Length: 282
Image 1: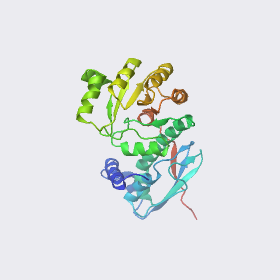
Image 2 (image 1 turned 90 degrees about the vertical axis):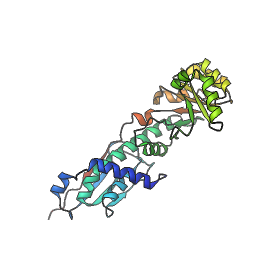
Image 3 (image 1 turned 135 degrees about the vertical axis):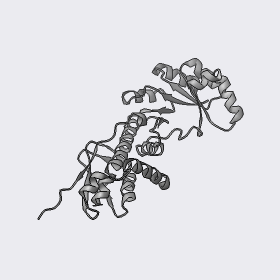
Image 4 (image 1 turned 120 degrees about the horizontal axis):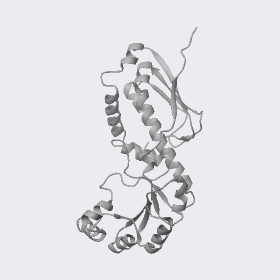
């Protein structure tokens, strides 16, 4: 897991404080502190897993003695019906952590599944599938980890990573040329990306010296012409109206990268169940 564990634990502590403020009244009323239980995690549909270790950290934070035994690892593909693993230990700890652990595992696996689908759709093309900053507030680290787990590539993690001049920057700065010039003056070493909506914008961004030119919501024909105009003088990134049905045609225009906000801003969680084993009877 290429994440800072201390940062992840800080987030888990905050989320548990939100969910368990005052205690779990249902579970604590039903089960004594020494009651033991077990739950199975099962994939209800095919997908790519992400967040298994993080889900386990939820339970271990509540109870270090919890057993979190998984048959798969992050990045593995599962089929409907696959038994992902089991969690065993104190029933109170299992049921108190269940919702948060599942929320994280399902969301992250949904993102990884979507990322893998887009990457597979352009396999064989010389193009990079990127995410965006359209992540859930407070969850960017995990959202972007899930994107990487699915095989796509992270774009900016923060606003500091790259100067991206978008439509509102351009309008308020008086145009592409003065916007690029102002950033070059104050941040000479930063890479600059410029969002363009038509070929005039492409030519202006190229003349201004942009490192990356975003082709936003352009038709396939316009993208092809933009790629021809730009040549090797800047990198190109297609964005807007990117769907699974359309992404390969976009890749075949010759763009270097395709960014997809839907990987994180409207992801559908992967359906994963967590069901308790029936208690043994004499």
